[in-house]
Amino acid sequence: MNDTIAMISTPLGSGGISIIRISGQEALIIVNKLFRGKDLYKVASHTIHYGHIVDKNEVIDEVLVSVMKAPKTYTREDVVEISCHGGVFVTNKILEMLLVMGARLAEPGEFTKRAFLNGRIDLTQAESIMDIIEAKTKTNLKIANLGLRGDVKRLIDDFRSRLLTCMAKIEVNIDYPEYEDEEQITIEILKPTMEAMNEELESILNKCETSRIIKEGIKTVIIGKPNVGKSSLLNALLREEKAIVTDIAGTTRDIVEGKANIGGIILNLIDTAGIRDSSDVVEKIGIKKTKEAINMADLIILVFDNSTLLDDYDHKLLELTEDKRRIIVINKQDLQSKINLSEIKDYILLSSFNEKDIEKLENKIKEECIVGNINEMDASYIGNARQVAKLKQAKKAIEDSLQSIKEKMPIDIVSIDIKAAWHYLGEITGDVANESLINELFSKFCLGK
Image (cartoon, rainbow, N blue to C red; front, side):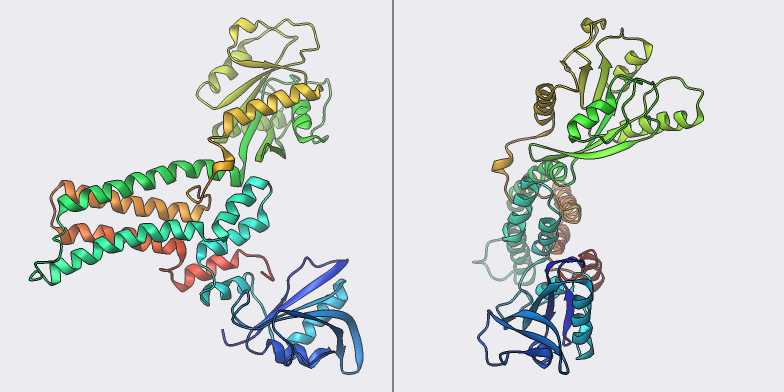
């Protein structure tokens, strides 16, 4: 990390401003060669200065230059940010000039990678930065900020500290048995500690599904026979005309998707082809995809037509979705009712063209899908897939230690599993990490971050 990196940190295109970020030992030297204004060596840290970027004697752009000197910067290196006019040509031109002067083009996520490698943040905070950038709801943002301010790190560090205490006492007992004043760690003493940690990890992992739903959204499939109003319902939830709506059965012949924000939870909505017997090859493919979508769905909205009697296909759909999380919607309540509602339990009667009815459906969705009070969520609601995987590995290692205790294995054998749990938890924060893991993680970041 001895070189100096540069990259555009704002979306490239026409706009008010573009920001080009430079970080490294020679950041001030390189920018000073191009900047006509104050001598950047002599200015105070964390100040902004007006001037021009010049190529020899030609003015390229009127700019503001922010100077942030190490170590109190994002990367803990000297950082300079050039705010220029937001045009593709002028932004690229300034970046090109910086590269000619000796800077290197930054890789995706390299600024944040340097922040991690220089000890400013841990891996949970680095991943939270991307979660903040990608947040689609207020709830997403809240959970991401918990990670960014270090709450997840403190949670994991507490587990690791307790494990390390156990490991240290075991090592002392093994290596220095003559120290009689040192507490002798036996499997009977170790068992309640391991059981308590196992229960705590179980509780956290149970919350991870809620976190996943908040972060990724709920895969919601709208199913029903042709012409029951599935597409109209999709359009109503999305507040846009996403799907084609006609009176002709079979209009939707493939999957139609969209996203809706329901009380801070993203619904990944899928409008499917109506399930029925069909000789149409294309429609058969759509029906096959519908059945596959049912198997993968987190939530199913099963739609029936209020003006039509239930038939064998309707009963088949009720049977197919019986063990799934579902909401039954009786659509077209504005038409004369012919459906036998006594054959259905727990349904919502509505018209997809009535705003109040749609709000009623949204409230039902929130009841079905939100576990607990979102406002009370804390760092134990971990939604990052990598972190969850490591938590599961740590829990498995603790379970293995408990099994060894149950089988009355020697204490040094039990210690092997405790060390494994400590290691897996360290991979969450980056205290235990290899170069390939670091490179892979930061390669997923956007350019300029």
